[in-house]
Amino acid sequence: MRLAVTVLAFFGLAAGVAFAKTPYHDGTAEVIKPTDSRNPLTEVVSGYNFRKAMIRDVQDDDFENPGMLVADHGEELWLKVEGSAGKSMSEVFEGCAEVSLTQAGAVYPRFHSGAGKVMSLEQIINMCRETAMGAKPYKWEKKDMLGLTAYIRMQSRGERVNVNADGPAAAAFARGEELYYKRVGQLDLSCAHCHEDNYGNYIRADMLSQGNINGFPTYRMKWNGVGSTHRRFRGCMKNVRATPLAYGHDDYVALELYLAWRGNGLKVETPAYRN
Image (tube, rainbow, N blue to C red; front, side):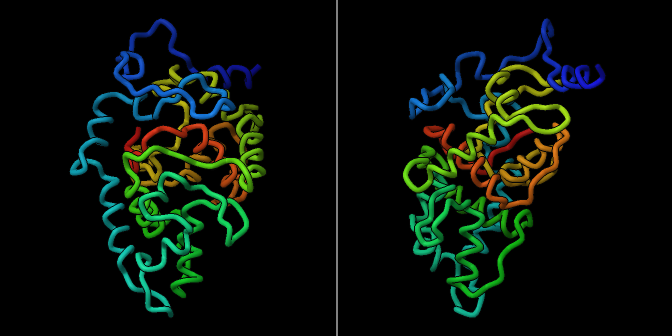
């Protein structure tokens, strides 16, 4: 009985309570059709459009958006010569990532032919550092990794997400889809319970979005800083009382691929700003 009450409190859908409308509700949001018939959504909407105007205004102003400070740090790292090869990331990235700088933020996670597996952008950055620069890898959730990831993704800002889930990426995609619908934790909930079945509803004081990841790395007020997609995964796992996986775990990369695919066609917004 106590668990059932906890689940109800977790969803906390505010029926009959008046809240300010978001652009998603008032018709001003960009609502697109899925780019793939396999997508279970009938409409695809950025998390930006589930936030109140004061949040959207901060994201829209590069001078106000605190995530830009981390991206600016990433720009410094992009040009910094490090490692035994005496090279900077700007010199090695495109050959290492197998795509251009302006494409990377819209197409990763992606199957990397050299590595023979689907990789996240963070993993590509560390591979570039170790193999092409002869430099030490960055720690996943530290300022350097977040900064460089934000800077690289920002070069695709405004481009449409176009993640490929077919061919050699198909196995990871299938695993990500499986994980998305898998019930976990003491609350026995899946990603779909919040972000597919209940988007547009309130969970306590916050409106549930579709969980699209086109704005990551994202500055969250809750974090008082910028965080990666995998940090958000770990937070969700803790919310449902499940044991989180390690940053960069194959399952998280697969889930990231699946989520990015669900949001194909949305604009890259990095660095986004959220509650």
